[in-house]
Amino acid sequence: MKQPELAKSLLENRRAIFGFVFALTRDFEAAEEVFQEVSLAILDEAARGTQPEDFLAWSRELARHRVADFYRARRRAPVPLSESMVDAILGAEAPPRDDRPGRPGEEAGRSRWRRGEAGARRAARAPR
Image 1 (cartoon, rainbow, N blue to C red):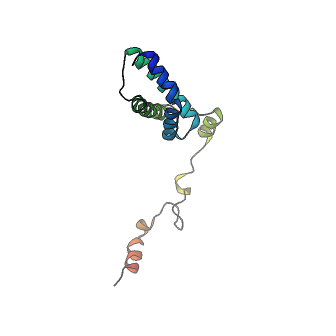
Image 2: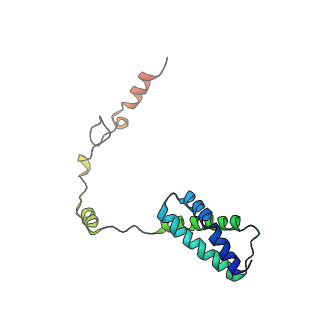
Image 3: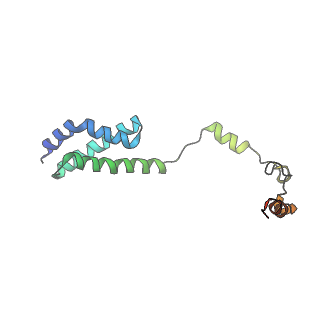
């Protein structure tokens, strides 16, 4: 397929390709972004002289890889904190060790295991 033929196939199948990308992303904005990347990749491959046998299957494979790349890049991107969040984190103080609450029903800093009650409870519940 020559470049004009691939471009024509892209235009003819754009709804199917976009629908496929949207089905994978479930996010309209992400689907638009990935679809643009897929379109550019198709045109780049056409410039290289790629001749796919089945255009739609080939373009879906490209789209699947671009969706994976999109989410991989999103996962690596750092999440910026606002100034108010940084101030809140830096201004927060941890409570003293003795004042930290334990699990519900426990004294602060002492668990059932340290009080020796765990074995007694288990023995009381065990079937005989």
